Image (cartoon, rainbow over all chains, first blue to last red; front, side):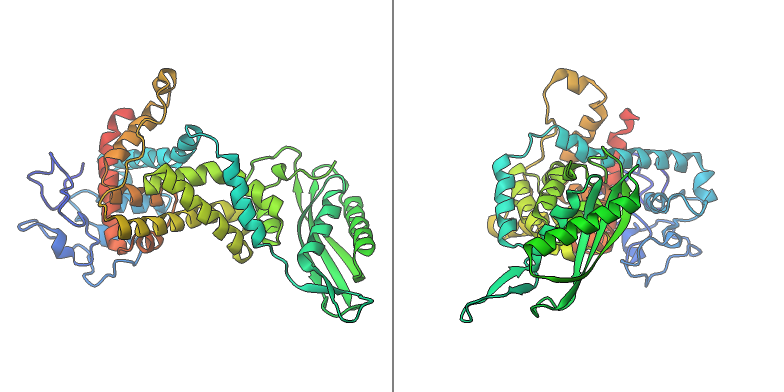
Length: 251
Length: 184
């Protein structure tokens, strides 16, 4: 550990006394975390008025040129991707060793959850179905789309959500296409109003994309004309992404 | 052959779920459920509480998906909702139970000797070291190093200040790097 400006007498046994609130220069009141008699370097660029939530600000964390580099400053340097190059850290073997230890710890932290999850039992299927039941209670119906009714006293509607489902089904049914999103433009609440449907899809790598877009367009058009009363002005297809066959689990 | 959602990227699943595709949501949830539960377990210190927190988080994720600006970043966003719900639970427990510390997470989740003797030894050592930390330091460390949350977010979660968070983190890191020295 580095020699820090406080507690140098017992620093070897316990470098971070738990009763010292912040063993670093960035505390709101820098004087409070420094023990009596500790060398406070008046030249150290500590701003007493610095708000605690100012975020990483390496200049505030300098403990003094001869006192090594504070762990917190090392972490901020690591957070910044070791940029810009800090000679005081990079050229001190001690600081570099601490930096390496922090990096190792961080790398392990990043793998900890994967490792925890691998050692845990698979989720209970009934748990998932319970969550999905609650999700379905909050389905996204969207706008109501009226249907022609021969009976004037009653009204019939389909929901925008149901139309979106039809669009997704139709688009996904085209070989090599996967629907990413779809939008229904136009005043669907007025029977017979012209609507424009926009479908964004991802195409399987290797598929000819113009033919794929054309196939999605005709599948969506025919599904909507067959199953809804929407008056389609156009179906616009955008191939926005290309996917590989087996990229399951990719983020 | 129809599109197989289990091969879709997170971004595609998030966009579809935001537009109401429940199947896409289920695939997304199943894909990350293990990590979500592991994260909540790290934060609450209890598998049972974690399961409750993840359930609440899942419903909130479904509700709030339409507000997500960057579908490709859905995983990190989901994990932040998990930590939000975990701390809601921790707070409500504190109000009712008046307990200072939480049940420690198992330092040794597996007793399989071969597994323990493998390259997981360092990870086991980290688990054990984490279990010895005070609960507040352990939580703050997990929020930062495991969840990648910002100092401001962590202060909001834990109801403290950014300065206090940085102090707890510094102490947690110092203890952990010291205890992990033998495992470099």
